[in-house]
Image 1 (tube, rainbow, N blue to C red):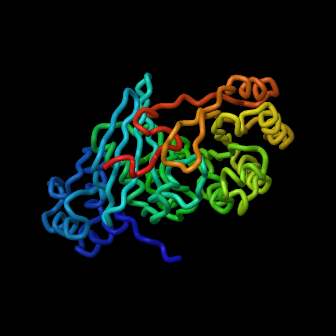
Image 2 (cartoon, rainbow, N blue to C red; image 1 turned 90 degrees about the vertical axis):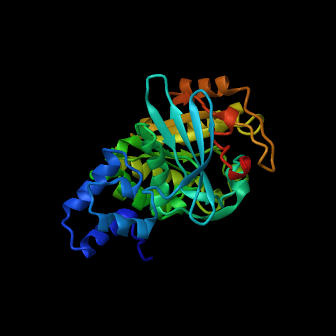
Length: 344
């Protein structure tokens, strides 16, 4: 597949075509990531001819995503962005008491995987985002004074279903651009094995999260149809290989659904799934996630009332586990609630 040039690569080429020295590119990146200038014409350190060429190619602004709707709660901010073709995606900014800021961004317009408890799939799948569209979600927050302390690909879409995710990772970790440490980035997947394997080889320090939601194959296939293509036992082998190769912890997300996957039998099966994996088993960590209600899904679920019992079974068996703190459910900004027809 032919690689699509990112805007940063295109700008390097424009500078070269104008026979300008490379330090003009350095000035451009500093204008963005040091001075937070979003408008090309405001980059007065650049020659007029270069600013004009950039505007002709990209329009007035560096960021290609346009904010069209904003909702805020005490610790969450949700942005609806419009893209060049009218498609829309959502991104979330989270603020913690210690001043830490975390951002949950999208990798696709909609999603094709149809997890029964997730609102995003109800939109259907429109298209993959480009690497620029993925990273420009973060530029919006950066240009508006936020600190990009940590990033998670837990927004709309399945990151590993979009090859552009790896170009986005290169941009985010580029020391002349976002300068993010790989350890500040988390990618969440429903279990796309080729994507897990590529991450293992190319970005060994990026955090990996796997959406489990049931330890029983048949039930997981019902809740998450992707299990039919990438069965749980094969995904777990890929996760084992990831841990062995990287030495990094793998986070396992488990949404707690009342009367569906919250029984003692489920908890014990999760223990059985993890306890005999090998000497690296201590690097698996379970995040129990209270279900966030949405009316967008065909099937209606409730959050479990037995989270404490489930937690205790895992904890007593020596499994690393915690109950994830949720923000933003009151503005449909929490896990599983992102859906672009929530607004407008």
